[in-house]
Length: 169
Image 1 (cartoon, rainbow, N blue to C red):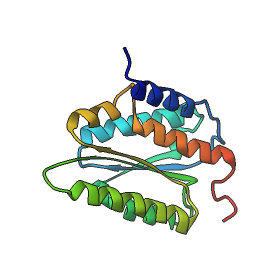
Image 2 (tube, helix red, strand yellow):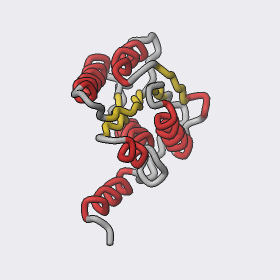
Image 3 (tube, helix red, strand yellow):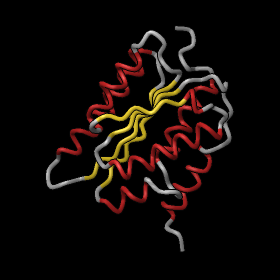
Image 4 (tube, one colour):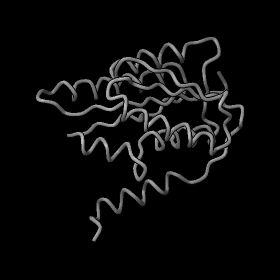
């Protein structure tokens, strides 16, 4: 028997994965944390696959690796203020609870920082950072059944398809 919360999450995830087609010339940047790299690599693969299925060419999907999740906000700001910023930025990382509250502080800083970049520069930034209590939870959210990279890419595609991608800048 499936846990009701798990069932709800699967249904919500499926609803968010509706096929969205966007301009094949849309450019996206995926920012990825090297900390917990094997897990983040799964997120990157999910995001890239989602963008390709939506019709974006490989040339228009750029992956930039950085040291950790904390640095994603600064990286996003650098990318967003380029002369030709991408149409969307996807930030991917994995934070796992340790013995201290450090992961909570980092998670809040990353979420706030990425939001600020999106608001300040008018470039959609989606949040694909897994925040987990343990390695088992993190693996589950970086897998094939549930992949936060895919979900973050779908969110970016939805914003692009809505016409709210900052094209008026």
